[in-house]
Length: 552
Image (cartoon, rainbow, N blue to C red; front, side, top):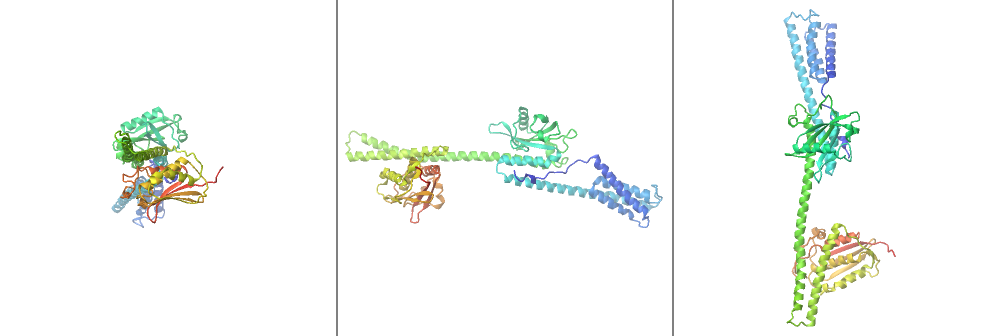
């Protein structure tokens, strides 16, 4: 997972301890006493009547550096020190002159106001810096999330970021728990492990309670019973917080935090719903909830993607079912109707048919039976292609002889047409499955007849290349637009608007399976198939089969 080190940890938010207050006191006393010593030693008062304003430098410095407490204490100490050590009579708090009283109170008030304003500016500056840091962290988080493609990797980025950012506050590990496809709660991602450990029965009960009630849960767990001993090397017990990931009114998952406890309570987090709404007491809560919102949105987006994919699959299934019923039912009904009518005609007892008529009717039955057989074969081949069950039984064949066999078998289909076979006679053998290539050529030639006017020629060309054997079937039909030349190899795709009056087949075009089957059979040979438009009109379909050295 790249770039996760760009998520910088937060170091602010530490509560002030007695050590910090002791240092503030020492700095305030030292600063005021230093200034008082300088004034008294050089006897600057009353030669410089407003020399007391020099104390404001110490107040400003302490307010900027240490905060409000140090500045306020320095103001009070300056008031007392100036009175006791500088204003005569010295070493007493007695003041006789009115202007000296005024000077003392001006010193006190100005010191307090200056310290308060400066400390307020310091707090605002720290708050702005914290917000800027939080914004930068969130920006880096979103950028890293977008770099990961899979939802589980995106969730792991969030889990790792939560640990990295909030580790100084006691967060040692983070897990995201979701129901799997069977509805069983499982750890989907873990910040510290590539392969999350399974939930124990008690842990699954905790997670189920959080999802059911939509409320957080706190548990104390023994490190030896967990899979996180490496995160708690110096702790026997640690705290687990189970937080619901909520979209709307529904919990879609659980975020489990493993944390150290200090002083009997978590010092920086309050995971109650009230604290989530009111962030004044814990200002970083809002920032933490932003991480949870990112995880929740990712889970919801992943769910919506799965739902959209399911809907899309259902829509495609319905469309394919409708296309199958529309095309196959027509192609099944037409030959069955012809066969039924022809057979009924032959069985009529009161009519004596001449031998030539009987032969014509029998040929019609045979032709429609072959057509029906090809349709069923295409359906079976398409099913095997989709299941990945195609295993060509390759042997060495002469391609020209194979093509000639197909042309001879389909001779009745080419009545009134000129079929030309072009290419050299001395060709190297090609390793292929005879039945599969026979089916491919049959589909291509049948398409050429179906979509071209009667009497137009069809050209079959063989062109040996350096590493491929190129076979093409060219017609003189309306052709296929450039935008649709890749689509014709999809299941049930039919170029209906190219059906023109005068073509050899006046019925609805084929089932839309022929070229899809051709593509699957040729790819099973590690070959290629594509279509181009001929400059003089019509379409030309190409087959490229691998040409390897002949092995006896």
